[in-house]
Length: 333
Image (cartoon, rainbow, N blue to C red; front, top):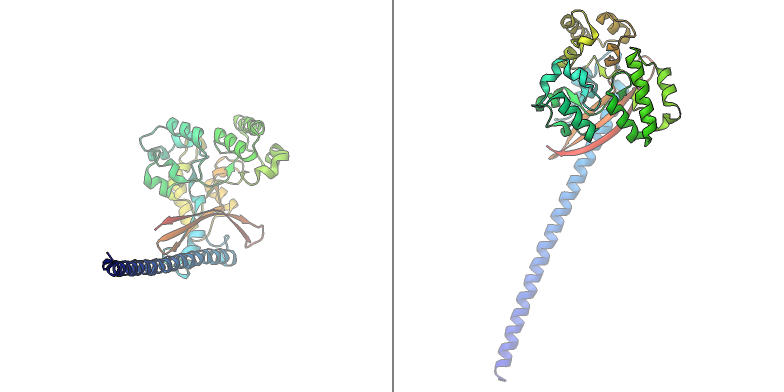
């Protein structure tokens, strides 16, 4: 037994050395992995910080160089896109119809009904009333064709008191203010205006909102929903052909509007003249001359930073812009 002790001790020592070596090897590997993970984290942070810097530069460029009275947003972006990273994009959400506020009548009575994905208008409005409003357009993916969602519709805009769906207007005001009675009162007043075929003016809206002005904020407005200077021809034609407006020669007016904005943005007065409608026409509650919502995207390595922002205009000429970011999110490129 005594002769086995040295051998056992030697074996134990070898085992200890092996364990120590394995431990050290594992420690080295762990350290290397930590360094790799740290490097990746730092790279990700740097990449995303650079994306945010690009967003800041884009906003500054808009405020300093875009004269919205002399150049459409689309024309401005064509000229400035080369100054930003490849893959950056900027588009007007005021060129698209908000699926949270669209009335079933506009959907039913225009070519837009053809964009539904095997659903009825009632299916859509029931789903929206039970589950909406939504902040992500993808929530409507089972109800509209993918291409239409990507080109004709959006989920961000103000609610125009003269055009927004009454049910959704009441619902979003309840969510915004926490006061269902107030929201119901607003809806009843909106219904009365529409029944009497009257357009709600700013003074009417201010009186209606009253003490809830701070809670409502800029959600409810009488600003037109769409920007005729950026709206897609398909959306514009669907609006112009809506039988409610009884518009004379809508297809010809589409060509006039598209040709006119190619050289200079339409202004409220010139738009009214081109359409041949009265200043109180409900059509001018849909078609305006300002882009009030923008969506931008900036590449960041294997990801993309997307942001939604509002645009306010001063009464100066050229107008000064106030930009406010509402939402941001990251997606995989």
